Image 1 (cartoon, rainbow, N blue to C red):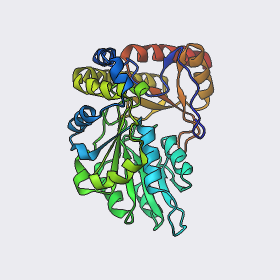
Image 2 (cartoon, one colour):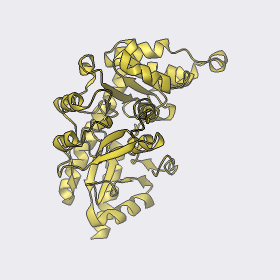
Image 3 (tube, rainbow, N blue to C red):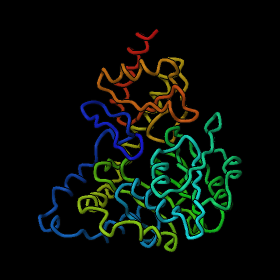
Image 4 (tube, rainbow, N blue to C red):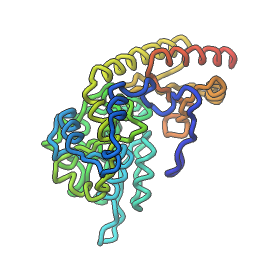
Length: 347
């Protein structure tokens, strides 16, 4: 994705490139959506039930939750609230450790702030010393994804604490926990002690609501106040508000998918070992695989078989790497069979 343009609309195939829930949403979500009335659709949506369900789900108060139209909107709101040039004319800086979710850069550029890149460590461990060295009086935000996208490597909570204690007054640390349902240690329980940390969550991955666009910003009430000014009053539509309650209530469906993701990752790890292909153990619902010079052939071969993969070769540290969503086990087996055909043909 370049700038704010949407990716190509690749739907007539197996979507292993967007880290979506490859099994679809809970049947209870479909039931809830089918129950919407014409009167509900005609009225501006109420949010009390959705906010209460989300707060209970993540273990915070309702005042510590801001619902957003997909986490992308939340990231843009963070940039608008904390990264605009102030009256003193100093251009704010946002530190983004690489590799990173490309929407961070888009949001920072939209508000005219500067991106300070921190290059990755060879093993993709969080580059704490380099991030601390990059912090200046102009730093207004540090973006951290935990687990990281596209590597799947988690950042320890102690590391996030250190960064939060090191930024200047008025700066925030944004922790994107889009993949926390699949692994890693959440930072939410630390929020009471860190008013300068905002946590982002999404229901696109483990709950299958990507098409309805439901995200959360979590933080102390005073920290969320500038973000509430940046998000439209009725940003969440009524279908999303109803669906998120149903999705949260069907915990068994979510848990079953998390187990499938774990099994799918194990299958792909075993396959990579057979192929002699390097991969990184992932706490997300995807695996980053270094396919090297065979990457173009693998991408083309998968596409010819109706399987979409994500080329991450352009990211720092990710040369020759493909990111593969590991969701429904049957889909992962289909991918592995296709990869074996492609690799045999590429030898």
